Structures are given as C-alpha cells and as structure tokens.
Length: 584
Image (cartoon, rainbow, N blue to C red; front, top):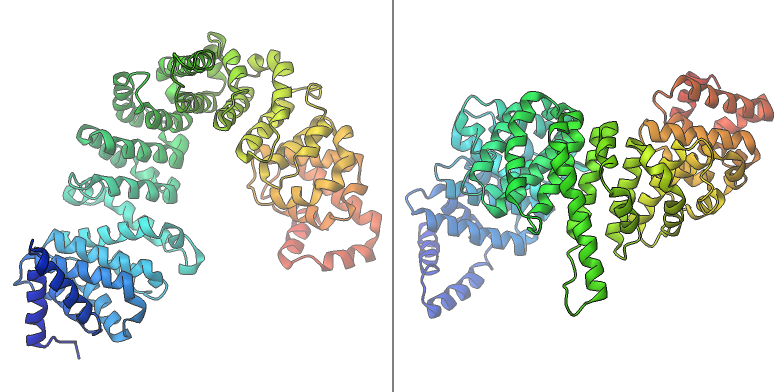
C-alpha cells in the first residue's frame, strides 16, 4: 500500500514551510528548532517528498522549499533513512520528474543527483535506465526533466559513469543524448543545450558528453555547430569561456571530421571575429587561443586561410612577453612582471598550427624569428613555459625539420638539462622532442649529452621516455644496447599499453635493433617482450618480420623443450596471439 500522510501531520509540516519563508529572525530560530525535532522521525522525510511531488494545490516556492529541506536531510543523514522511506522518495522522484513546473522539475533533479552522489548510483540500478527511457517521452516536460537530471548526474559522477562498476552506462546514454540533435521538436533541440536561463552547466555538461562520445558525434556535427554558433550571439563574457571550451573539446573529439567547407564556414567567422575584437593584453585571449589550438589541429589544411594572422599574433605575443620579462628583470622598480600565460597559450597554439598544417607551416616559420624566440623560451625559469616550448620544438621537428636542423647544436644541451623527473611534464616533452629529432637525423645527434647519458636518465616508466629510448636505440643501437637489461622490463610494460601508431613503430624498431646487438640483455625479461609484441594489432610487414626473427631465434636458441616450459607461463590470450601471428 502506498504511503499516505496523516492530515494533522501534513498541516503541521505545511505551517513549518510557510513560517520558514518569514524574514523574522525569531521565527527562523523557532523553525530551525522544530526542524531538528522533526528530523528525529524518519517519516518526516515522507511528508517532505509528498509536499514536493503531490501537493499541487500548494504554491511552487513552498513545494520547492520542501524538496530543498529534504535534499539537505539526504546530504546529512541519508544512510540512516529506513529502506521504506528511501524507496518511497526514489519512487516519487522518478514518477514526477516531468512535473508541469520547471522549478519543481529542477528541484526533483537536484534531489535525484544528491541521492546518487551518496554512493547510491550502484544501489539504485533502475535510475539511469528509467531516466534514459523517459527521454523517449512525447511530453516535453518529462523529456526536459529527465535530461536535466541525467545532465546533473553526468557532471557529478562522470568517472563512475564510465567505469565497469556500473557496466559503463555512458555507452547507452551517449547515443540517447545524440538523438536530441535530430529531435523533431526544435523546442527540445535548442533549449537542451543552451536555455538562456542557465547556459553554464549545459555547455560544460556538453563538453563532458563530447569527451565521451568522440566520433559518434560526427553525424550530428551540422546540428551541433548551428547550436554553438547560435550561442555566440547570445553569450556574454563568462559564458563565452564555457563556449570556447565546448568548441575546443568538440574539435579534439571529432578531429579531421571537422575539416569540411560547410563546417568551417559556420565555425570560423565568429571565432575570428572574437579574435579581432580582443586586444593583445586581454586575458580573454587565453581560452580563445586554447580553443583555436584544438580547432587548428582538427581542421588541418582547412585552417590555411586563417593561419597567417593567427601565427603572426602568436609570435608577437611570445616576443612581447619575453621583452617585458627582460625589462622587469633589469628594472623591477619601473616595470611589472609579465603574465607568462600569454606566452604559454601562444606557444601551444603554434604547436596546434604545426601539428594541423604540417609542411604548410614551413613558409610561416621561414618568415619569422620563432626559432630565436624558442631558444629563449626553452631556458625560461617557469616550468610551464619550458613544457610548452619543448612541445612546439617537437611539433616543428615533425613539420619542418629544415628550420630546426641548424639549431640542434644549441638546443640539445638545453633538452639534456631538462630530463629532470622532478618536473614530469617538462621532462616528458623534452624527452619526446629528443626522440623526434633522433628520427629526423641520419646520424646520432652528437650534441646530446651522449645517447647513453639520455637513456640512463629516462628511467621513468611512462610511455614518452620509453618511446625516446627506443628511438635513441634506432639511431645509435651500439651505444644504447649495452643498457638493455636495465630498462627492457619497464619499457615493455609501458609500451604494451599504447595503441598502434608511428611513435610505437619507431620505438619497437629501435628495441629490435638493440636486441640484435645485445640479445643477452633481453633474456631474463623475454616474457615481457613477448607480451609487448602481442600488444600490436597490425604491425607493418617489415616490423612483423623483425618480431618473427627474434621470437624464433630465441626459441631455436633455448630448444623445443625449454621453449615449451617457458611458454607454459604465458596467459592463454598471449599464447593464442603468438601462435596465430608468429607461429611460436
């Protein structure tokens, strides 16, 4: 039987809610005392949910207040609610998420999220499926209420939603959300992302959604861009920052799929308009520069018509900041210290241009003094400036090595001194840049503090140092191979976790060449090498041949019987893959 309130008790609760809206301090004190007393009775919470969801004769502020008091109780004592009370509250929330009043819908949404945040997502298995199901409703209020609740849950519990603890419900939720871009009702298509009353959480929730959805967004790009561009006209200062974030995240998610004339025509004019409006010293440039960095990387050659003024301005920002820093160092009493964030975001955008435009960036680099500026940035006292400098150096090495080559003798010692794990991101980027330079050199870069010195300092097990060690070994196997035994195990465990790509390819070629020079260095950890080889989905044919020769060479060396004993230790999946791909 459904819970029903006692009439006298209900009147008492209503009176309390009315009194709590009084501006009189003495009345407020009495209300607080009364609330404390009533909280001793667990079914007081049933009365509160009843007023919120069923007492439609009451005015909205009173009903909403009842829900907010309940929300505070949930926050403070949900663990001590008797199961029938907790169940009644949950059931009422789901049954009334489509209330005719937007205030009541929002209050119920907050209440649902608060219950979910008390560790209840696992204990309330029907919540997400039911909310997703309500998105199919023909009734606008139900659809809007369910979407609002899901959005709040996404913001509060994004990590849990993408975990195995709940069987990754995002895999079901994202396609549902994406349907909104095709919804027949424009009323549901537009307010859902940007209702003018509360644009902030919606854009940030949208950014969270994009990160998870990735290429599933591609079919809806036209709708999404229409919505984003529409928002440009509506948004003021603070909300624009969220909008830039949403655009940047979209570009990161869909990558080159954004490079279509139709999409570029929609997206670039409002961005460039903002770019032209902002002065060099305006801090609103930061989020716009970050956004353009993602857009340039995604658009690739599609960004060419816009690249020259953007490139020039970035170089100017770096130059101005360096000049101001120098003046401040020399005359601190006359000049202010510069905000180096201008330089950092400008360097990051230059990286985005180099990555997106590839060889096309060569002309721009040729006509500017960026290599001189980079030499100064790489020696800056601020780790974040060095971090961005090394990233740009690596990207320019890939895009236009012709301009990096003459500077290598000066740059290498600086890179060497930054292989300091104390600043892990600086160290990773310096390491990566060394690896990229190695791949472009026909002979080993002699100005590295000796490849041995570099390899010896790259002991951190992250993927970037591992790739660089492999690349150093590729360029100068004789010099790095003697150290194979020191790093082969962390090297293998690190690189087994990254997907097939060019960087992994060059690193594995290097490791195979080092094994050729020093096979004894891999013997003790050969099982880790086997596991790393098996992590490849489709290596290039010549790399597959290298793996084949090493595996069969090892098997022949130890003999059939020893190999059988050795391969008994393999997990079943590893055994199957090595048999299928390499016949061992």
